[in-house]
Image (cartoon, rainbow, N blue to C red; front, side, top):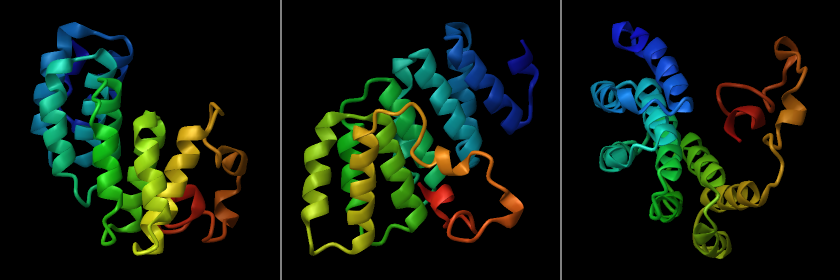
Amino acid sequence: SVYSKTKSPEPAAGIAIALGIFKDKDVEDEILGRMLDYKNNDEAAGYHAVALGLIGHGLAKEDINQLLEKSERRDKLLTQCAIALGLLGDKEVGLKLVDRLKDDSNPVAVSSALSQALGFIGDRRSIDGLVTLLKNKQLKDIPRAFAAVALGLIGDKEDLPWNSKIAVNINYRANVETLTGNSTGVLDIL
């Protein structure tokens, strides 16, 4: 197959997503193997994890959980692994993400990734933990702010993200840093 012949991680990740969308169970073990091979390439490993989630390869849960645990400061991998576990119906992933969001030392990108993953998964069981986190005035503002973001994303009924209305037809050459800039603009982090 084209996937088997593709050696470069990024194109392989794209093909894996396509195979995941088509729920091609014939390649699930190969996708799992490549996810593990690419564990040091955040995007490739993450997209392979999502592909496994799309296929519904339940046996991959443990390996994806291990990647999630090792994604401490790797925001892209964290988001994709959490989404994959959500697709696989992992009942604990939302609670794990809320626990990680409590960490005051998280970089902004990691807190953003955690809130995005929580919003994508949309597990209602994480709401109580997020509300508790939001009310905890002993925590710094960043974890509390991203708890609010996660709650908003969980409750959002729109098909597209809230910031898509801002991003549509934007002139990226004339942007101000508050919108997009070094991964800290509102369109970058939320």
